Figure 1 (cartoon, rainbow, N blue to C red):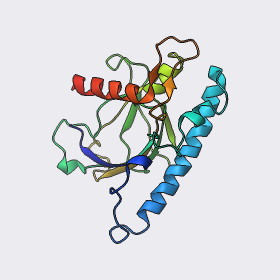
Figure 2 (cartoon, rainbow, N blue to C red):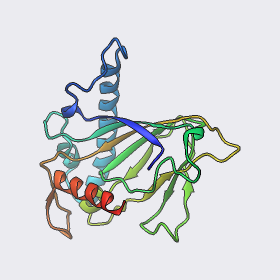
Figure 3 (cartoon, rainbow, N blue to C red):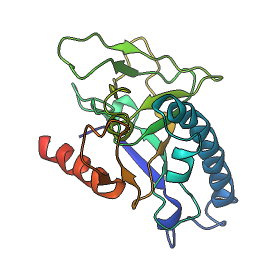
Length: 214
């Protein structure tokens, strides 16, 4: 298992799941504000893809409507354990592709480990380290957008390795925002390469396939 834990924020699912102001003052207000900023940036990026794919500019913005109870975009707050808590040979995070349309990843300088692999062949391709920079948001295309683009926009594998002996050994923190289309939105590419499927069913298929491999 990955050496990490996380707390997820998905707006329609948060009733009874927020820590109180006594436990974490202003946490809910702060994180909802940040989630909204992530959504706005994600939609600006996706609008560029929409135009290139021949969709209306607002196509993906409409598909990721935060005002509807079918909204399923998610902000994930990640804590990777300090290396002394890790077992020898373990990974902080294995090598998946993301299931969503687009991921925005925020990393802390000095807490590296993220690596990406182009394409789908993890065995023969070279892994490239993505060093954290304060002014950079790492953007990752996910499987949902790959299908929606009829494979014109490929997703890629990524992983988080354990630090090397000469590197920072403490806990690692990052934030990931997953742009996932509303549950009832139909995913169908411009060339109709794949049959239509709802965003909810597609995510469930990807989750089940991931666990099946485990």
